[in-house]
Length: 342
Image (cartoon, rainbow, N blue to C red; front, side, top):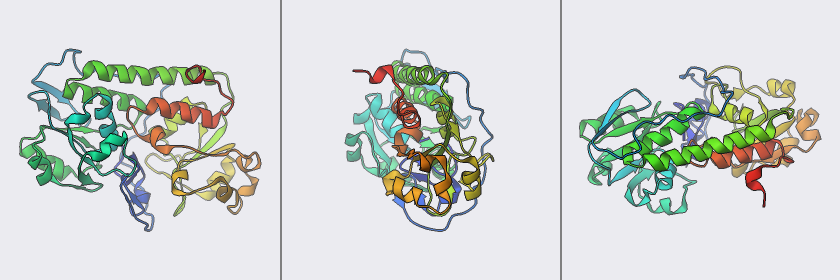
């Protein structure tokens, strides 16, 4: 999510702890030495069918309502929220998609804020810090937060102690990302709208799977970062799941929670496609092709090094439909998707 892992985030999507000194949440980009990632989530098997969203409430908006968030905490929302604070970029996108932009009074800092009008919402948090006093001063009657240390647990506890309902989201896989969209819908009285959003995402996944069915799955290295070592999806990261759905065979570290991939493993894997999730930071195909030893890679020989919008692919929000389509077309450039037909 964009909260899934207890790691640094960039552009609203989670990054491994290896990059915590390198970048922070979609927000603060600061260079520093890499550290060893610490696994904190159990491996999540990639689904073989379209993730089925799980409704969390009746289509009828009824308050008070008690919800169970992704950390297992029961949260009572006494009345339909009028002043909402979003502490993850994915939650910000979701709230605006549900037509609640005028009720969002505070958000987490985000360098790739979406939609554009969300830029007018004041920042009340950065990665690793939350301004509790400011949130309370805004009169927030609902806070959507990120779990697994995306937001400091002590800040969440403090808000709850002050009577502010906080729903914590943590999506290690696509199915949970869809459930979280519906959880936000239930917490805000927008259940029907949220169900429509997740249905559209599910339809996009079905479309991509149908279009890639029967195609050979090329070996794919999705580069998250190459500043201090090479980083790609961990095997339990839903980005790896997305690549499989999009018709690719993802390179991972092979160890749950670990994103760093040794150079030798990349060479041995011999990716047929290299996708540059770090293209927005200036990484180019020419730079990749010039890396020592990479001239032997199939992707380099075939010119299959392609930039991709990492935010829509890895941010667990309403644009996942765009993300899965973009990913499929990056892996299979000749793919024909019905939704893209004129």
